[in-house]
Length: 68
Figure 1 (cartoon, rainbow, N blue to C red):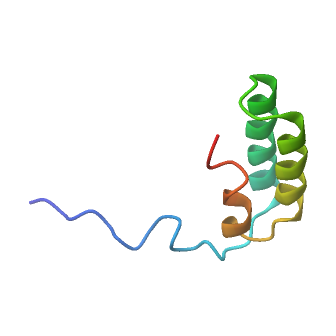
Figure 2 (cartoon, one colour):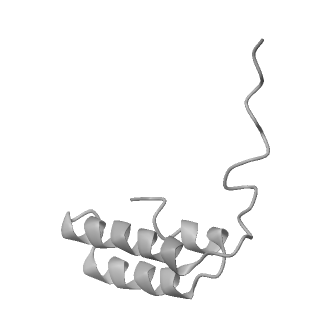
């Protein structure tokens, strides 16, 4: 018997959940790697890092690293 894929998960669901310091640290690590590898500019890194620090929900923090 097979079960259908869940449709009530992902960015559209739970995006308003609060992020914690560990979540922010994960995003900041990704941003540091991206600037070190030249995938984003230092100015973009600064902007995204500030946004990640200020984020209170997953929706707010997700845009900072989704396009890497």
